Image 1 (cartoon, one colour):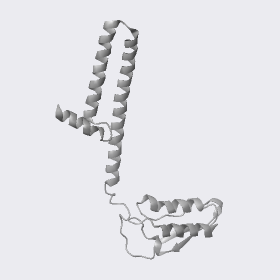
Image 2 (image 1 turned 60 degrees about the vertical axis):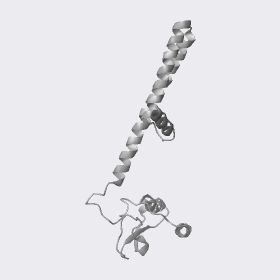
Image 3 (image 1 turned 180 degrees about the vertical axis):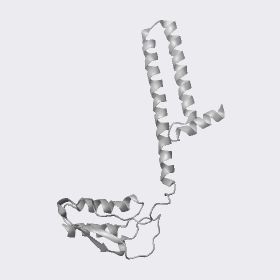
Image 4 (image 1 turned 90 degrees about the horizontal axis):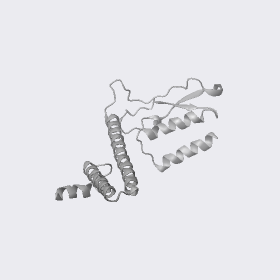
Length: 176
């Protein structure tokens, strides 16, 4: 009994529904339902019947919610395992981006070579190669493509510094 109470105390500080907490919750609701049934039989008062219905609804809702949380936690664990799994063998170590299928307004895309176009992802190390091509769109219509390309570094786990953000801000001001 002491170990159950200790596990119950520890499960309060554990996120999500733990088996010990669910057992204690179900036991408490079962005891409450039994008490309400005894009081209903002893007094023939409809109040205890209504309280019993409310208690049953709350009991069901808590168990439903606990199962939904457990399902979501399992989905999150599966998602984390999927993200941690190694990339397929046919995956490329280079991040390349071709021209858009159809540039709005007929704007052209100019390719330039920059050393900063090397991989920003800490997961893949690439040779110190200055022949990597970075596409720079021209015109107002292609600013959305520029924003999408700049956000690629955020999704790869790359952590930037304040000075790099200043360079990005200066580049946006010059293009306006």
